[in-house]
Image 1 (spheres, each protein chain N blue to C red):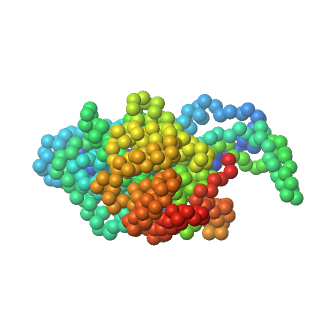
Image 2 (spheres, one colour):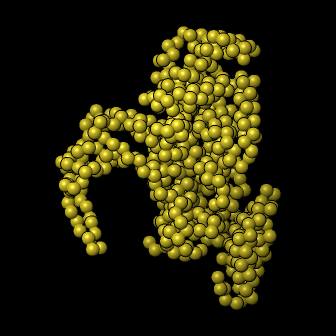
Image 3 (cartoon, each protein chain N blue to C red):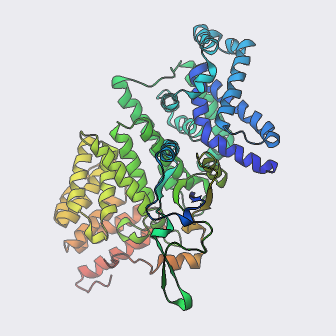
Length: 139
Length: 429
């Protein structure tokens, strides 16, 4: 099963555009990332720019409305993520617990939904039109 | 934390730490079986103590320290010596190492080498393939005997016995705890890769009604492969195998329909291929290619899989490249199945006549005599060439050879269409 480990750094909701992690922090994180890689559990990871450089698209009345960052109402925001493949939620927690994170950081663990766990009608909707032999999907 | 939560946490720690723990201990005591017992003892100690004391800050180091204390106790009581009285020299060596070395420093040693030694010992040719698989999953995958039994649909006692016998065989054969060198390395590495791919294919062959432990074997194999890729980063075939498994796994969600029937590669909904795994597979293939030299069998198969993965639609598949890769594969590891696949690729790249010529060369092949795909492929190619009567005969023969009811119906349907076409009636399929 796959889990996303979401890094939530306190204060990142107010960070200025272009804010980047310092070298010391990156060095510690690199070592941690390497341990995930060596254990064969790491699928992907990325760091994200602060929300002040981003935007939100909301849908009041079903219509898209764009708000540029920062977002004063946001209490906590994601600063980056790891996608890992492990055997259990406990294992994901064990890996997250090893992160050399600072006192201002929280890691939220969320399991990725697999197609196989969805009910059949949802699966069918996700599958779209039944593929038929010889049928080509649009380019 | 409740006791059961703590137990869950301990098993997670075990999953993460057991291989390194066993590997480190095996270097010290020179006996994989004893190393695993010591590690298990440490696990039992954790299960007793952690629910009260809480999970320690560095659980791996705690387990290692506990296991080492046990090892020293054993030594002092002479148990180790007793166990190994036939190998007095070894035991003396182990004792010397245990007492003379700074044990705590050993924890911080680079465990990579130990892990690699453990990989090679678990996949040692002195063991049967079944034993290699069981031992690898147990010692390196951190799976319990029960989990291995469920995944391979055999009784737990059978797996337990396999593991006990494997450990005994390793001890009796005095298999050294080391990484093979020189010419031996290639052959031994091939054995390791074979075990990993076998585990993967066992998981890939699982069907919808199976216990979830079976498909989970694909993830276990991928994890082992990824670990290996970090342990021996300069071996192109390791990256080739990882690439092959990542790309094959990327199709897991697209290869069966909601009723559980298999969907052929070219008919799969490519929107459901896992792009993350495809990217990882292509990156692993690049690593294999980047190391230089001719591609090995795994890398070649991965390169073929990559051709499919890169094509946005089945029609965009680079068949001439696939045909060339099958040429190379047929030369490197010739097999009738590879030849048959090559025939299909040739037909897709250069037309049905080219494919049929290659497929016809396989008619006399004894190992394909009862294999339904040969007449199935020949039937298809003959039909494309307008030789409907011959095509009908081949498709009916294919139908009589397959054990899959659904596939038989499909083949008989195509045979009937050929019969109609042979009579000059319009083909309705």
